Length: 236
Image (cartoon, rainbow, N blue to C red; front, top):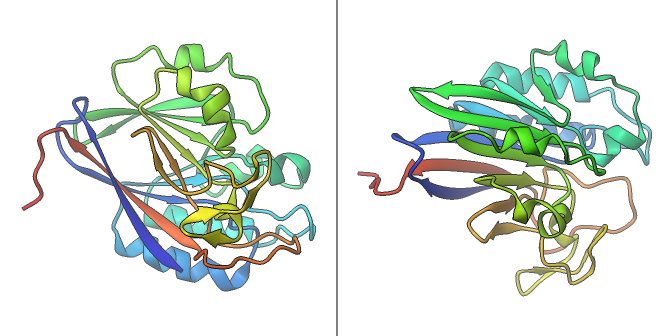
């Protein structure tokens, strides 16, 4: 498992902030503590969990709550749901919230990080974008947790959102020449499987594989470290 860092510059921010993004855990015990230890070492101000804690293929979910509990120990944790939570709804929003994590279901919260105002929202994987009309109405820096990266091109690219965090594509499963081969809802040689796009969309490869038969190749599991800094900030 690797750590990947991205830096986002913004005039809406007065001082640097560090956040960690985790996605696509899929109830894999062997990946739980390696991901948590990487995240903990960064001492983030918040942890963003971008869906798919459970695995609908294998019908397993017993580690989802322990995973969130570990995240909450690190920093305040904010989660959006993934397609696996929707299609295998064995854990309710209330079940997940008992961990202390904030579960965002087409909703948002306004947060203060050392005087900087950041609005964090969570988009459901399937449709229902009307809530974003209210989400956009702020001068704060806006982060949207949106599990499906393909909705960026179809919907979210047109919205007044500063940063969108996605998973789901698992890096394209097999990566050749730094490009994914296959992703759900994007087909062959998809565009949005990994990396930083247009200065607005960050897609993580996830910290586990699913129960499917396609293996990962040339495609490490990853924890994302996201630094948001003032436009003219220089790290000494």
